[in-house]
Length: 275
Ligand code: C2E
Ligand code: MG
Ligand code: MG
Ligand code: MG
Image 1: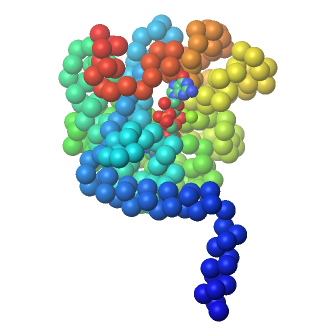
Image 2: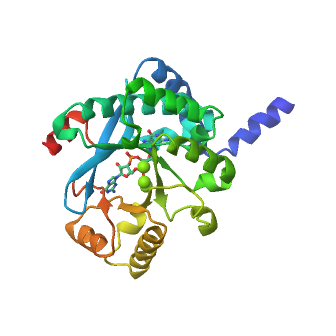
Image 3: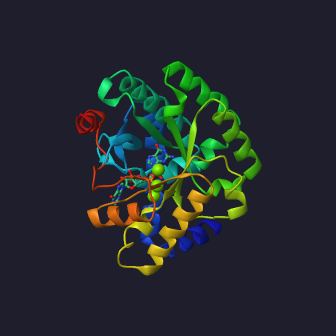
């Protein structure tokens, strides 16, 4: 009887929900296998300064799925986070990014490059995150001041004291920090001023309509003013047009990233852009 009940309740389950659940379950299983079979790859998107000089890149992970094709992070990072697989995946990303940075450091055209790496909240809050990151930096032989970790505002809700402590510990070794997607999350200004940051990254949702939407323009202006008053560098993401770039430079944004310069590309292609 209970079984019948159970079967009946399934009828009220919307088909798209079922598909979503199936997808998540499949992806989670496949992610485990993907970690063992080296199916991930990093693409790199250039970061450019006010003089148009390529100063480095942001590493963005992709999954070369054997049957589904190349999957962007939107298709699996969320599932990796809830399943905990983000921890080994994030470790792979950091190690691979540091190895790439070491190669760039050894080549004249790219010797000045910095590399930004996204770190998810769950990964950052692992008890051994600091030790592990320092071990990866040491093994790769990179100059730690060239490594920039991108964190998000969510960390401020999850544990401010722990976050500040870990950032300080890593910063003592020269590692830099950028606050990603700034303005989209929980922005408590009192916490923000306590975070030992180097850079604020204006979220692309404000950049997109910065020329047409006065509210977005105001937000962009405020973010730049706030960041500058805290002594931070300001980078805009998602810059697609020359007009957006000009506007952002005009309000004091000192670095930018976006399709206007380059889409995320493989390491070789980015090197060609530096030559
Ligand atoms: P994000 O860190 O904010 O990265 C910027 C995203 O904007 C990237 O999407 C990039 O391809 C896209 N983008 C860059 N320039 C433009 C532009 O001019 N126009 C538009 N429309 N989009 C642009 P992607 O590669 O799909 O990554 C999405 C998100 O996935 C990232 O957002 C980041 O939060 C996350 N992610 C990517 N790689 C990693 C990783 O290795 N670890 C973790 N934890 N998260 C990652
Ligand atoms: Mg990022
Ligand atoms: Mg971002
Ligand atoms: Mg973003």
